[in-house]
Structure formats: structure tokens, C-alpha cells
Image (cartoon, rainbow, N blue to C red):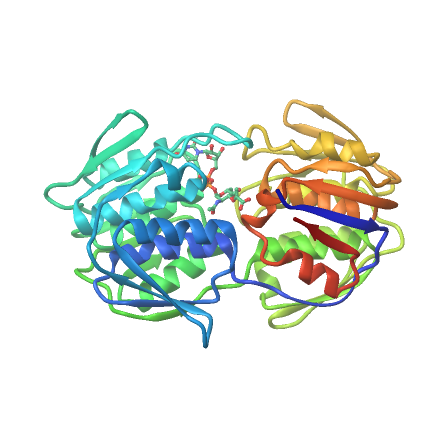
Amino acid sequence: MDRFLINGPCKIKGTINLSGSKNASLPILAATILFEEPVEIKNLPNVKDIRTMLDLIKSLGFIVKKNKINNSIIIKKKNIKTFASYSLVKTMRAGILVLGPLLSKYKKATTSLPGGCLIGARPVNFHLNALGKLGMKHCIKKGYIYANAEKGLKGSTIKFPKISVGATENAILAATLAQGKTILKNCAIEPEIKIDLTNFLNKAGAKIKWIGKRSVEIEGVKKLNSISYSVMADRIECGTFCVAAVISKGEVKINGLNPKIISTELKLLKKIGAKIKNFEDSILIKGPKKIKSIKLLKTKEYDGFPTDLQAPFMALLCKANGKSVIQERIFENRFTHVGELKRLGAKISIIKNKAIINGNSNFEGAELMSSDLRASVALVIAAIVAKGNSIINRIYHLDRGYEKIENKLRKVGVNIKRLS
Ligand code: EPZ
């Protein structure tokens, strides 16, 4: 199992180019099920979750071809099977996103239930209820969802009881080829959905129109047209590198993302003391001498502060001058990094869904264990500013979502090595 060896403290300086967004690529790959003709997708990040999604698409009977010249992939329909196996869906919850498109296009699907994971139970009831309102009938047996829509899906008006990224995506994908009009209310409006998935589908001929902050209208179409599309840059990767720059009191130019997309995070970093200059598609960020604490930081759905950056921000606030509190409101168990940060010298206590962080910690290198994707990257960030050697075990979690992170960090001055 691969591990990272980081010798700190390091100061980050230089330029980082962002990869394509993992969480935008996943629903876009699921959307390729809706097509008759080939689709070209560019800027996919080369990370484990994307490779798993491509394997899932292949297992459904599509041909996936890599174009080495422009690093894109082409997905083409061949002999379709509507069965998504446990072995692929269990390792990546986004596998459930094939359910909506399979039903919409092929009127039936059998997909494994994704199950829970370390950060929470993560049920799929909102997905199933929304698809049910579009005409899906289903039963659950031995861990599989057996679903069909014999007469095809039909448009409907659906209000999600709670905002869910995945359920919004699944319903949009299903409604794209459904008969008639669907209106979805109380949707997730993460840029991966409201910008990228919407642009991708509309470019192919779908009729998707956002009609208010959290409502979208989808007029079903008969077919989608072959297209070539480039996925947006990864905003969570961008936020991660911003935090790494600030904690190390360094200076980094991050290329590839419109700063407006992460304005909430940038405002927070400014409050903490960072100096930030925004350009059209890049950010110049410089860490302050003294990091200021934050009284209360709550994770929220977009355009609030993202749960996916909660762990990196916690590492940062350990170095702030004073006490900060972080409240995790999206997932019930997303504090697995706390025990590991403490091994470096962090002073954090947990009360229910709040982490109380006493700042001014002097981190000293230690041996650490990754537990989930974003928890792992928080440990990397902390190890960058810890004195001496840190070893981070089980970085396969990190490889699910960060492309070549050690190369990117090494290029800006971090003393990091992958040990195989
Ligand atoms: C997406 O997960 C992201 N994954 C997550 O990214 C991200 O943390 C999360 O949204 C929140 O922003 C992808 O985009 C592939 P949800 P998703 O449905 O869709 C509850 C990362 O690190 N819920 O918005 O699974 C659920 O348990 C990750 O890249 C139900 O109760 O998240 C959670 O408490 C991990 N029933 C809340 O809603 C449902 O049917 C929000 O979950 C669905 C969700």
C-alpha cells in the first residue's frame, strides 16, 4: 500500500495547474449512457474514482477509447447490459448515478445499493423517490435495486425534501429523455450540476433551464446528439491548494478556475488574513504571517462553505491565533481526521457535530493514517508545516480524487515522496 513521506516544514511557492473536476466528471460520464452516438470528453482527471466509473460504463456495454493526442476519451455504445455490479458500485457511491440514465434510455436497470461509508450512512432514498415520481417501479433484494419503467419515464414536478447533490443529478439525468416536462425544486446547485452537467447536456440538445435559485425545468427530448466536451476544473482541489499556500505562509498562483466559483472560500481565507488577487481563470494567494481564527464555520450546501473542504480548513485553523469552531452539517461522521491531526499536536475536541479547535499548535511530524479522501488531504496539508518527517499511510483514499498531488506539491517546494 502506497504511503507519503513528507519532510517539513515547507513553504509553498510557485504555480499549480488544476485538474478536471472529479465530481463534475462522474455525472457527465453517467450521462453518456443517454447517447446513441459517440461522445468525447476532455479534461477528465486521472484519479481512481474516474477509472472506476469508466470501468462501470464499460461493464454496461460501452466502448471506452483513449485518445492519447489530446488526452480525451471517447465513449461509444455497443452491447448494452443494464446491470451495475456490487464490485464496482461498492467502491464508489457515484455508481448509483447510472440508475437514472439507464431507466430513461433503456427502461430498466439493476444496480447495486452503494451502502454507507466512513463519513456517514449515505442512503439513496431521495434518488429512489424522485425516480419513482418519474415512473420507476423498483424493489430491493439482496443488496440490489431492481428497477423498471416499462412505459418509459414521464415528466413530473418533484420537490426534494432535503438538498442532495447525487439525487439532483440522477433526477436531471432521468428527466432529460423522459416524456414531457419535469420541474425539480429544492435542488443542489453545486457548479458541477448547475454549470457543468447542465452545459454538457444542453450542448448535446437537452432542454434544461434553471428557473430560480434552486429550481430547474427539463423538457424531455427524444435523443441527444454526439458532442465533444471539456470538464470544468476542480474547485475542491483549488480550495485545497489555497489552504496549503496559506498554512505554509507561501504564495501560489493557481490556474484553471474562475475565482467566482469559490468566492465563499476565498472570502473566508481573506478573513483569516490571506492576500488574494483574482484573475479571470486563476488566483494568486499569499499566506499571512499570523493566521486569524474563525468564530464559527458551518458546512453548507453550495453556495455555502463546502463539507469537502472542512478537513483542510481544520488543519489550517489549528495554526490560527486563537479558538475556532467548525460545525459539520452535511455528513454525520466527517471528523475522522481529528484523531490523526492530534497525533501531530493539534488541540481539537469534538462535541456532537462541532469541532472546537484551539489554535497555535506546533505540529511535529508523526506516522498517520488516511481514512477518507478529504481527511487524507488534510493530513498532507498539516504534514507540510509539521517539523520533521511524517508518514501518511493508506493514501489510496487520496488517489480517489487528487491527480498527481505529490508531483504538483513537489513542484511548489514540498518535500514529499510516494513510498510504494
Ligand atoms: C456529493 O455526494 C459529493 N460526491 C461529495 O463529495 C460531497 O461531499 C457531497 O455531495 C456534499 O457536497 C460527488 O459529487 C460524487 P448528497 P452525495 O446526496 O451526492 C443525505 C468528495 O469528497 N442523503 O448531497 O452522496 C446524505 O446522507 C465527496 O468528493 C440522504 O439522506 O451527497 C447527506 O447527509 C464525498 N438521502 C446529505 O443528504 C439521499 O438519498 C447530502 O448528501 C441522498 C442524500
